[in-house]
Length: 245
Ligand code: FPP
Image 1 (cartoon, rainbow, N blue to C red):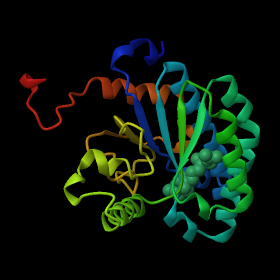
Image 2: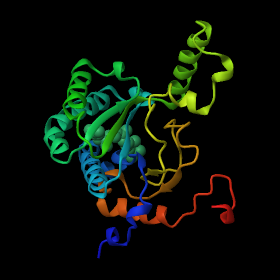
Image 3: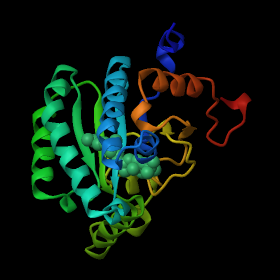
């Protein structure tokens, strides 16, 4: 029996964010190259996005490449960019078939021209899909995102377009890359590491965190259902006490 049958439809998260970790260790365990691990990591991307689409979840954000990842060996960085291009090429029809809209956050202009153009074309092609929104975090740093928001707001205050007293949490969120996207209800990290690693620092303030030992290439639908089952058995109090909920 699948855990899917035990999930309560009304209690599913609206937005799931995932730190996909463990590709390198997965490959090493198999005596293979890190790049082999990343190639197999595409399975996890497909499994999790298709499962979210089937369940009717609105948003899935995948941490695919951090600004810190640019410091990896050049060959690995190039392979990841090639993988992004080839995955978009091979999967865009599946996105259309599954009614998935592609989106991206991060400093996208850092991407190599070909990867950037492929990404933008796929975003454009899928923009009218109305099911799951799949957001890829690419060349992403939460600290940069926050600094960027502060600069934009400061500029508006300096120009007299905004009063300093108008700045509040809701307004601030409009200046993040994720403007208009609800904050994640659930954040999953694979591979046993228990860190946030500069991912959605603002947006994860009240998210439930789920850590699993499973390495990303082995993360499949059933693993996602496990995380969702765990999530559904938690009480989200947002600082209140149980009796107030
Ligand atoms: C972390 O594993 C994974 C990444 C930095 C890259 C994630 C990329 C993919 C899942 C494949 C391509 C994705 C798309 C969207 C096409 P790691 O290399 O840090 O693993 P390790 O900690 O075991 O070394």
